[in-house]
Image 1 (tube, one colour):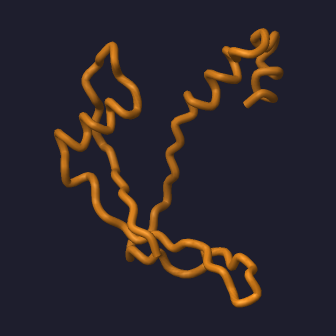
Image 2: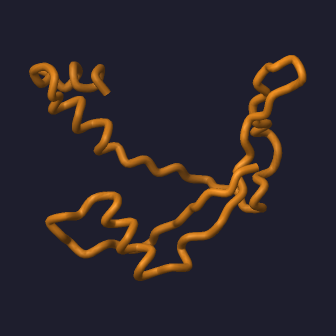
Image 3: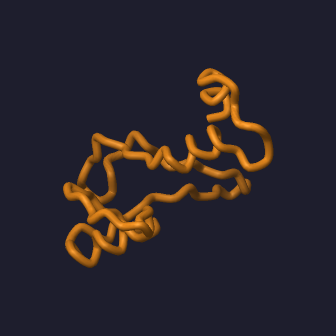
Length: 100
């Protein structure tokens, strides 16, 4: 098992020109330090034959808390697909969806 950090948010950050995920995280943990907590994360293991044994996701969460939601920051995926640096932008929304 490996320790990592997790946080939950129910608040908004002040608007800033230098706002982004790192700045938001810093603001969040400074204003609400209890939103960050240590957690246990199961990791894959290796058997005697040298084969990778994946985490058994059917077992209960080792932290004793189950999470029902997954939030993704899609800006880091959608923006490069709609404004690529190495080619012209997609001509249609369908082309952009394919790039995503």
